[in-house]
Structure formats: C-alpha cells, structure tokens
Image (tube, rainbow, N blue to C red; front, side, top):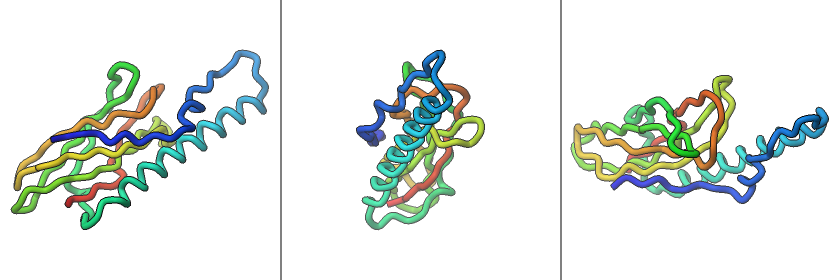
Length: 145
C-alpha cells in the first residue's frame, strides 16, 4: 500500500500571501520572510517525521524522483523505490520540491510499502500547497526498513 503522510504546519496559510500592487519594498520583504519561515517549518516537520522511523537504513540510492506535474491545485511527482535486497522492504522518503533557482518550496514524506525483492514500486509525492512556476522534485532522504 502506498500512502503519503501529510506534513503540514499551521503557518501554511502565510504561504498564500498575495503580492499586492503598490506594496512597498519593505512589505514585499516581510511577505517573502513569512514564506521562507513557513517553508522552513514544513521542512522541519518532514524531517521530524523521518526521524521517527526506527531501524531504517539509508536507501537514497534505491529511490528516484520523476518529473513534476500539476494535479489540481497541487504539484506531484512519481517516486520509484527499487528494492535490491532479498526480502520485502518498506521505504519512507522525504521529497523536496524546489524552484528553478534551487530554492526550497515544500517538503513531504511518502511511504512506499511492501516492495518485493528485485522489484520496483511507485508512489506519488503531493505538495502541501499550490506551487507556482517550474518545480523539480528531489529525494532528500530515503530509509529502507
């Protein structure tokens, strides 16, 4: 079974701060600081979720992120885990969504369970919010357990 773990922060509402025509440079900077702070909070929550996995081994090399696409009001990416071991494995994966400049936009945690030996299985990483512009998904961390 594949399921995405929702990683959210109460500050996500701040991520939708609109750019107002005629706002001052100081106001724009404040809005950017709020977004940056909220994004850091989401990334921290994702890392906390990863830290809860007990007995996991680094499996970043087993996991690949596909291209991103818009799905409704979210950005998604297909994540593929390939199990090189001789027994079934579960994967917990932290996926970062970045803009074309490499700036962190969002982070989510995804589980891909029951990957058979020598086989691959996919899951969908789904952003917590609407992401604008070109985005790329990257596997920040993957644990096999």
